[in-house]
Image (tube, rainbow, N blue to C red; front, side, top):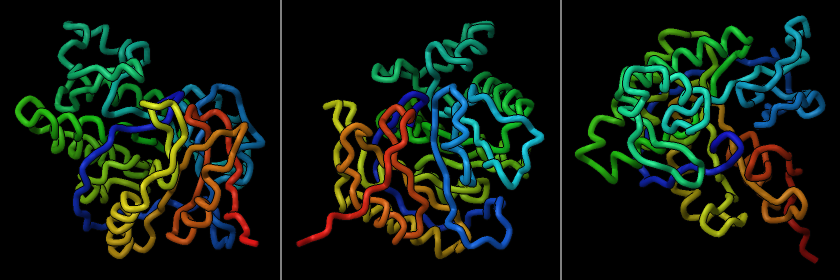
Length: 296
């Protein structure tokens, strides 16, 4: 998912078997279900955040005062795109100050998101990402949400020569991030082909497009093929068997003005052990999780 938007590039599926580290819990000994939200706007949303455990937000989101009791506020996770660079975003501005203006970082264009697929092998890009992370920590964020993991993986799949080593470099970046900030909550978005290697460095995994998604081609909300979901769920089940405490998050998309496509998705997600959230494709408006229709 992108800031102001919703989908990642599609990938071939790979097998997964590894252990994931357990995220720190905000509520000790509680029986309430784990709740999370995703919001990419810049206006403070106290009612949306209330009662949630994790809040994935743009790193421009105005955090509440630090004197609010930790038991009454979620852990805020700052958005960080590690596979693409928005052309008018903060990382692009950091790269523009480098000797080559960041040109060596950009691999290909993503016209829909006005971005470039980025070369995580490039030390200049990695340094820029860490610079942004340091800024986020100074602002008071408790964790990071790593988006666009799939983009460099897809690039290496399509360009095996030019993209050789992107996969291993992405793994090493996340490992270094975790080693540098071992107590930081780190959640990855999809990235199934490298999830076995990433697992020890992550606190959780978000399964975007669990049941519904937004089609960039048709500009419509559509259902996910159950066979596609089942293939990924099998991967998740193997990961869960390795680490029963793995935090699983499911994200779906629906029209907030005419909801209905995501009906029943919440129950399906919860039956598989996921915390569920539904939003519009720009991640600005929450959509109620609708129950299945009652047959008469």
